[in-house]
Length: 151
Image 1 (spheres, rainbow, N blue to C red):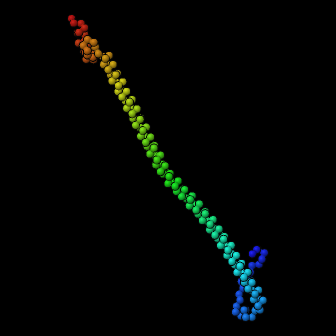
Image 2: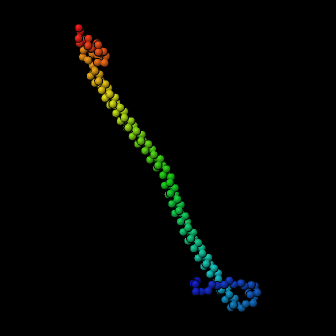
């Protein structure tokens, strides 16, 4: 049915119409009634096909939204796991750096202690007197002069 044709109207025929109407008029009314039924069936089919098409499109959109939501959920679930892994890696790295730093400090401390001991030994050797094997600070001035000048 095209838009140019007038839409058929609903016909109502009662029992008296069947008894009174002529056969030709009854056939004409029957054909009008058939056209009305066909027009209604066409509208129903169009509406149904539009509804089905619309529902299919809506279903497709919902599926896409669901897939997008699932993808986002997975991404959001992966972020904390990734951050936790990064934190663990940083902690391991930090522990290694701190251990290396303490080993370096320990080595420097040992070197400093060795230098201090060497400096103390040099100072002791410098203060050592060859006459008695004692340090100069152990002598009093009287003892030192009496040994050099026995008279």
